[in-house]
Image (cartoon, rainbow, N blue to C red):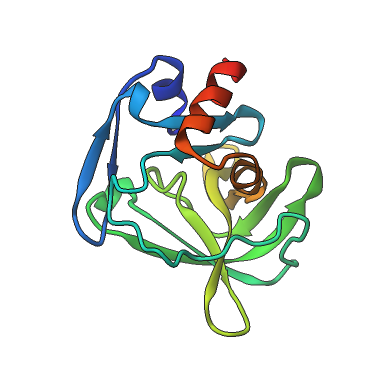
Length: 179
């Protein structure tokens, strides 16, 4: 839902590299967006030199596996209540919905956190990306709003994109075929 309109209407997007403060304004022909509307997930591909991304990235979890109920996860994002501050959130896996390839997590996802990475700690203390924040499912009973669950999409779209795309030119060709 975060980049759906930008892809559909070929609108420009702004990507900010938080650590350096550098940003890039990408027109439609300068990036590729692969959407999975059913899973509310997207991969954005841009030129490697557009921003100072690290050479050594966090690993993605094997998409054929999932974290068990009770495992603590963390996620980061820029919530609307503090949109210039990168905030850390934590919670435990409440369920993994295999038919939707998503986690339900006992934690919050304030507006503005959607699309942020969700990660778990590996044995060697290096985090691994297990998915991305998709939604917050509030628990409404009558007029009261009670704590709900965060919905996080697993890494399957990202894994599939990495597997099939070897260059930005190749991605552009595939995006045109899918349109």
